Length: 298
Image 1 (spheres, rainbow, N blue to C red):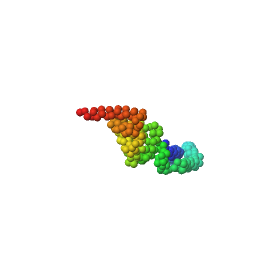
Image 2: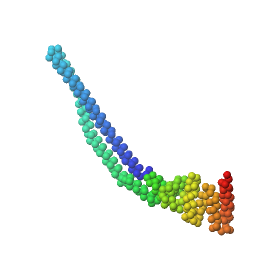
Image 3: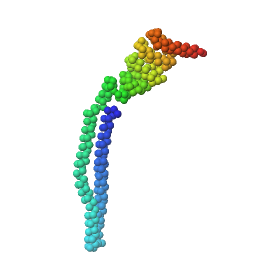
Image 4: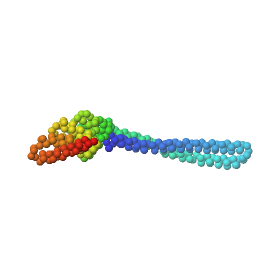
């Protein structure tokens, strides 16, 4: 994981922790408020009912439907029920008084969480740097040639036209033994930069990677690049060898024979390499002739 993603992950985790700490408190406050509203409505309904019952009791006594003894008994019962209805309300008030100190604790908890998130965010920026500066540092490593293959690939996602970065990625892949990816990286480098496309060393590296990986789809393009490099680096043994290998890979027997003729001219006639080159030249000329005859047939 790259450094910017580490920074984003840390901030995301701290945000989740902050929400996990604050949301239960908010929900509990809302639930407590809803319960208080329900209790208040219930108490109001009961009080109204008791008052109505008291008024009816007084009316019956005034009209003579109740004597003094029954009126006193029923009034005492009514007072008892009023006291019983008031007990839950008194208990609720006591609980509210008991919960009052918790409000300060929740406020302190929220302050601690906010301070922690701020500290981690600032600390992350101080330790890792801002995402923009991290990307700049990563780009500098690519330009200096010290970046890893993973870092180069991440950089190329944002700068796909940087031919030098493609070449550097190809070098990293060759070090890993991944010649197929290296050949594709060289191809991308040549396509993205005319300067790199005209570099004979890159041409030779490209051809070698393609031939080693046996990327048949790129044989023709690599062979063309090897011939261009051979023109720029005439007489270079490595360029001649790679161009010969490219010619054989695409079965350009005539071109391969021409290259061997040029190589033979630089060899001592009595050397083993000269005799082997002569045999190779005869074989290539024979194949070139058969290929020409095959094309000439209607």
